Length: 245
Image 1 (cartoon, helix red, strand yellow):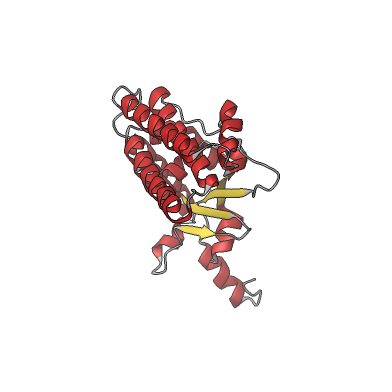
Image 2 (spheres, rainbow, N blue to C red):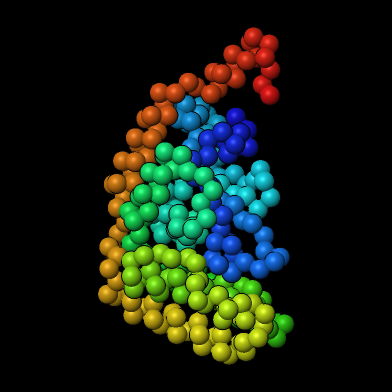
C-alpha cells in the first residue's frame, strides 16, 4: 500500500498548524497541514511494515501513524502536543475524536523538560546567527518566544493553548525585527525562569496516563484487525484483472 494511500484513505485526524493555528498568520503565511492516519492492522503482520510517518501528498503536509503519534505525545514532544491542541481542526472521524478526547492523558510535567530542551536548542541557533550575521532570524525568534510562553502557561494552568491571543502584535514586531535582540533575549530569559518556577507547583501529573492511551490503541488495532485485509483486496484485483490502481 502506497504511503499516499494511507493518508488518503486512513486519516483519522487532520488539522492546520504553524502561524495560522498560532494566530500569527500574515498575508504570505503558508498553510501547514498535519494529520494522523491509522494503518490497517493486517499491514503489521507482514515483513514490510507501514511507515511511521508520511510527508505529503500535499504541499506543507505531514502525517504520523497513530502508534508513533501516541509514542511521541507520551514523551511530551512539543510539536505533537501542539498538533493535538490546534484550534483549526479540518477532519476527525470517530477514532480521531477519541484521540482528541485523550488530550489530557498525554499531558504531564515531562513537558517542562521537553519544551525546555527544544527551546534551548533553538536559542543556541539564534545566538549563532547573531555571532555570524549580527542578527537572529527574527521569525524563528518570534516562534521561540511563542513556544516559551505556551510552555510556561501549560505548566501554570495544566492547559495547552497555542493561539497567542493578545501577544500577536508584540510577537509580530519581533518577527519584523523591530525589537532589539537584547530585549528579545531578556524576554526569553524571563519566560524560561517563570516556566522553571511553575514546574515545581504545576497542576499537571508527574507522568502521562500511559495505560489509558495504550488501552485506546489496542482497542483501535483490534477493531481494525476485523476489517478486510487491504493486501488481499489488492491481490484479488490483480487476479481478476482489475489492476492495482
